[in-house]
Image (cartoon, rainbow, N blue to C red; front, side, top):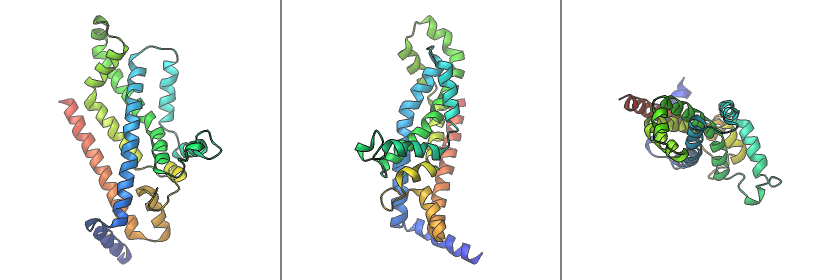
Length: 231
């Protein structure tokens, strides 16, 4: 118990004093996760809305695929991205393996199905109210999608926050494609795993507290947005 108390005290001191190693890891984690969420949002929201509102061949199969990919194991995503970016892979010439860019790609692949599936459900619920109006006005595909996404913006923001929560907690895929290299690709989740195995509990606890705080803030923001959407 005494060891835990000392580790917790040291962790709090590292957070309050903005320890250089700690802030560097947190900064990289936020940069990777936020970039991945932005990319997944730009892909997933229009994709989910299109599956919900438009009629095209393979629509039902795509919907089932997106729902299935929501449970895709992160280590499988990491392995696939690793093979694609390795020297013998089709994108090996880009030299992206073991870089933050590779981690962003892996997280984006993980988040897109989540964002798209949740967006599809949101737009489908909204379409019950707007379908007749859109048909009467003769809205084309682009106008239909932009209208529905605009009207569902508050609910879709919670979808984006859910994607961020998933990205910030990811460890398996980013460790495979990033390599957990100090000062280069070490993020909060991979650093916690490493420091715990090394017995450096203060650093692990400090990063864990920051990660839990971020998770709390994301959930609080999602709750506020849900209330705003209801009003």
